[in-house]
Length: 283
Length: 274
Image 1: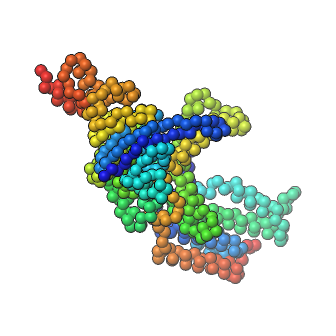
Image 2 (image 1 turned 30 degrees about the vertical axis):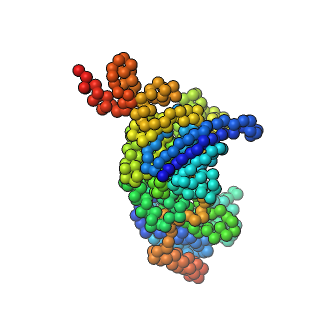
Image 3 (image 1 turned 90 degrees about the horizontal axis):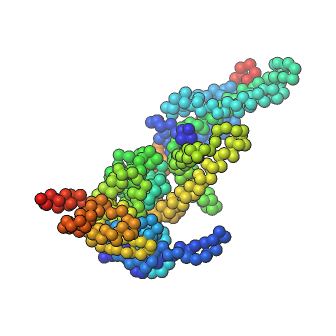
């Protein structure tokens, strides 16, 4: 079944002058068609201003399409009575860890979502414990979020979403504001969650190294989906990726350069190990 | 510097007072404050002092820590005492020189007033020492819940209070950062008179406000994404419910209020003019 499906999705921002009159519109998303199957790990890549975050906000009904339709778990987000169901089935993690933690204690923040859903008290405690364990933050349950590192805060934010038991988690550049250690922490957590809870994950990012495990990648530029396919397919088109101002991982870049110089390196190398293995075969 | 301010000055310890329901503490503090105005006699003060001493013991907050909390009101205390001492004309004159006159009544009022103020501050700070800001907001929300019937947005106000508390450290950290950034660009925050110094705060306040609004926007979005839609239909992770110890605490406080009233009014004990 399709977890998320869009059909000719268009979203326009209104441009306003200083008095607030509409002077025009700008298209952030232009006729985007994507579909995500249940349990998949989907990555959406794009440079700043490519419309990837706007697309993410559609999956949680924070924005509704100007034209076209998006179905989340079979529900049309334009229907007002479906709003809260949509938000429950697609949880969202944002970029800035500080601005999405509501509670003054870690466990209270994780409990915020279930509280809003009207879950009975005993079950809230159960869910909070489970989701804090799932992200490896159970030892910090009584801590204040202000004392945590960026990566830890982001893991708490993920736990807060997991506690609402969504079918799908949308991560909108969750690592953009983190240091390399925090980035690794968050990605490891997401990977573990996928294995344990079998949730659908949609990762929006501009770091290409983060998406090599994805089932499918969409590359966006200027509101359009310009490339789609498996990581191997996408990464073999190095020149095209560069033209969309994306940083191709160094291994892939090196393999590409070697191929240009006449070595028969296979296309779409993603990991260091793959390249090492290939190079060691040569004499 | 700014980061050291802990609103409510919660003092973590494991005591009966810390474990009490915040509603009990709020109501008791209110009753205690009122009780201080029910008497004007030595026996009354003896009862009040005993009660306060008992509470301080039970709270396990060190006396030194409590006394430190009195520092900010020393000025207020002095002014009250001086005005009462010299301006009250009541009873026999004890001391007279030039324009200064101290009467029996003046001395009495001044001493009573000082003691009363100190007890007032200690009593209410004991509440904030033993209650986390979160518990306080929860308690206030639950206590004021009946006002919901007359359309007072109790839940919303409580939610705002707890969010404000969560953002105090974040915004103060941000203030630090902005100050450093502006100093690095040559802003002079230290020198000049009051007005100049107030003016030099503008380049700090403007970016701070802008960023606070941006944060508020982000936070509102994050709350909506997590299905927040106001107080209706919301359950609580940590619901407040009275236990035996809370009921006992209510009884103790009510017994205290009655006894301080009775003893303060009807036990005749006089020491000199008091």
